[in-house]
Image 1 (cartoon, one colour):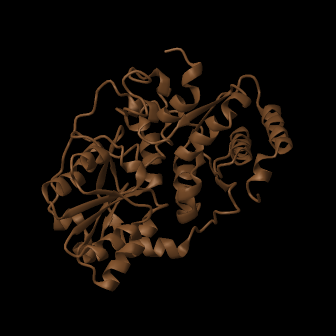
Image 2: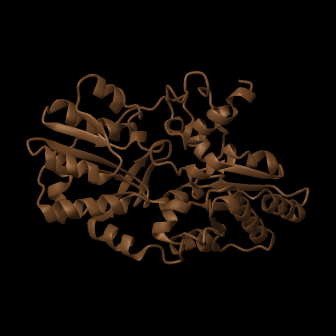
Length: 369
């Protein structure tokens, strides 16, 4: 299949690995953060960490929006639905297992709350249209990747004058969180494998601040084995040459300017939040999106007067330290014992793209805890 088979070609993979090994010297040690959970999954799924020289250390970034969602946000949305029999709570499948103080959306569904899984924001709008006597909340989540589809749905609701559809926005932005991580004391990251999906929307230009202000190279990568290996090679060449620039490996999908139409739609419907709490990382300025005032009619936070719920995290769950590269997932006190994919306690065990879930699913049988 085009764009898959050639990026899994054993000969090309072998040649790229040989080139990486050729330019790396024994004293080199590169700490590379893959900023997307999809890359983390691919690295372990294809065994790339075993093929690459030990001089390359992966730091698993905050590129899984479900993983970094504060549990209080889920509780806030579920609180509306559980207290109002005329409210339907809708969310994507990976949100359904996110644990809150009183359980996940699936737990609430089992207790009688009207919770429904959707595959698209338009599914939630369709539910609202078909149930005019109900109020339907879309628990919108994701990086810039999914924000356009939410924005289009809001515009569609406005066009059709659907007044029983509401968005609870948890959309977040990739560049502010990368800056926040780099601002941490004693943080050492040499370069970034940039997220492919979000970059389809935002393009390459927003990452320039990482290269110019922090002197860190960024290579936007695809998700196949050869994509990731080529991106690592590009990063290492920059680092060896003392360069820090933004490059696109994933050129078959990502353009420098991004998707201009999608960006215009996001800007039309959303504006930056002054601050947003990231699970394991704390509050980060201008790192999330909320509906603009002109769309308040469809804003769940406005229409339901949502009260902030703060949940104290399990202090033994060391999610922030993993995200900052201070610990590997299996070094967390709870990993594989209390915290598992079936019983996610920490942020990074919730989704299959979370670093802890990836470690658990791919390496659990070979690790000694």
